[in-house]
Length: 241
Image 1: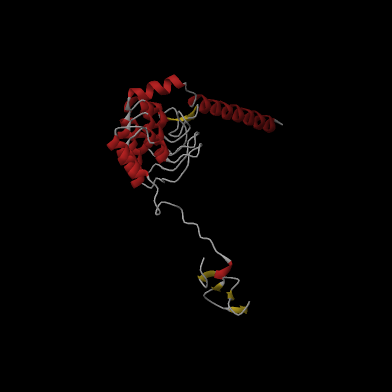
Image 2: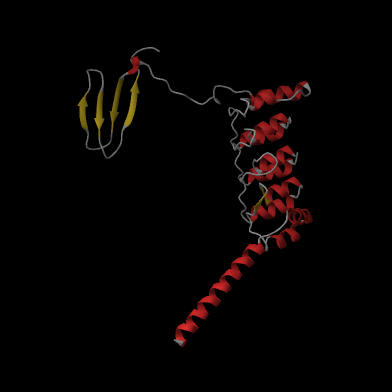
C-alpha cells in the first residue's frame, strides 16, 4: 500500500513539473510587438538577445522578424537573420508578401538586392496579386527590375487586376519610361509555349524502350505500349495547320 501511495505521489509531482515546464516554455515565447520592434531597431546585439527568447521563425501579427528588420532598414539585422537560416520567403508584412517585396516597397533597394542574392523567391504574389516585379515596375526602379529579371522574375504574371509589370510603368521622364518599357515588354521568348494539335497531325508513334507490344490502330498510326515503362510520344506532322 505504501509503495502504491509513493508511486501515486511521484506521478502527481511529475505531472506538476511537466505542466510548469510547459508554462515556462509558453511564457518564454510571449513577447509584445513593441519589444520586438525595440530589439530589431536596436541592432544586432539586441536582436541576438531577442533570439534567446523567441525562435528564429517567430511569427506575430502576420510579420516575421525579417519583415520587421526590412521595415526599419536594419540591413545588419537582416544579414544576421538570413545567416541564421530564417525562412527568407515567408509571407507577411504590409501587403502579406515576402520581405523582398517589402524592401522594394519601402525603397530599401540595398536590402532587396541582398535578399535576391540570398535566394528569395521572386514570383510569389502578395495579397494584391503583385510580385516583386510589379512593385519595382510601379515605382520605376529600373535597376531593381533588371536584377529581378536576372534572377528569374516573370514578365507575364498578372496581378489581381490582370496587369503585367509592363502595364504598371508610371509616367517618368521619357528616357526612363522608354527603357522600362523596352525591358518589360513581352516578346515571343517570354510567352509561355502552348502546343495545340489539330486533326491533321495524327501520324504519330508512341513507343517505350523495352518489351514493345505493337498494336496497329490504323494505317497511319501505331502504338508501341509497355505497361511498366510509360509512354513517349513523337508527333509527325502530316498536314498544314
